[in-house]
Image 1: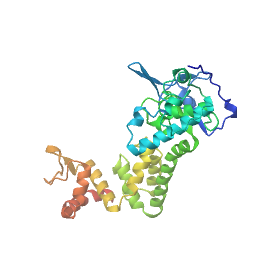
Image 2: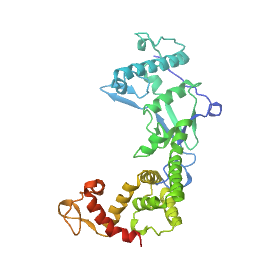
Image 3: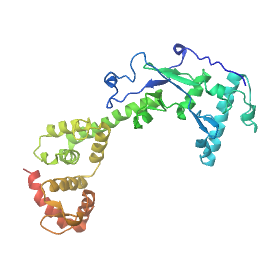
Length: 338
């Protein structure tokens, strides 16, 4: 079998649309590097060879370009057919570029006619590796066949140090050192939170301008200290506290969850908002409490509202239980009107 020498293009001449970039999570300690937006110390590099799985003496490289890989075999029939077609077209292109060997992707003997891109060609695949540091490593798959190979391998999980996207990197329990940055996808992920937060702030401004009573109920639902808000609470206090909440500096420190919860609350109708606020404050003032069997009941009657605030909500929204609703409002509303 032939030996292979891999010659790659200089980074300076490559298109910079796709890159492998260092990933750091500012909320996770990494020898203090996270404070400077770094994943590694200056001058330090991580190098990794393409993943190879061996079972019963048979090697399988994680290339993303093997139609016999388990992840391809398990696809539904129509998706499997499309995936095999895609793999063969890429492999045929690479075989032509790297070995000047033209093979028809539709040839029933396709894999046997390959010389370089055979799935078990260890002399070739053992030389595929990545070397990454604090500077981005650009991939130019349109012009560099080795970059095309690395791109497919990264997306298939062939390099443990590189997540296939920024979104994937953020979702991993053990943060990777690097992630694959395709300009459009990473920009969308980075702006996702900004767009969500801006929507929440627009909803906040709209309530401040035209429906302060609703804003009070939303504040009661979002803030842990719900009883601080009454109808006499200054509008600017409501606005400032909810602005702080949406930006992740309130009871909910996750900016994404805070903005999402605020938007969900502001999207509720007034009836549901009022009843939710009523239940929360009634529990605080102990007009209702959890009794035997886990049932939430008024302290002065045995009416069972439910075993959770959500069950209490459904109970009090039911027109048949209007008497219980009005009785609870008579107790809580004086505090709201104070």
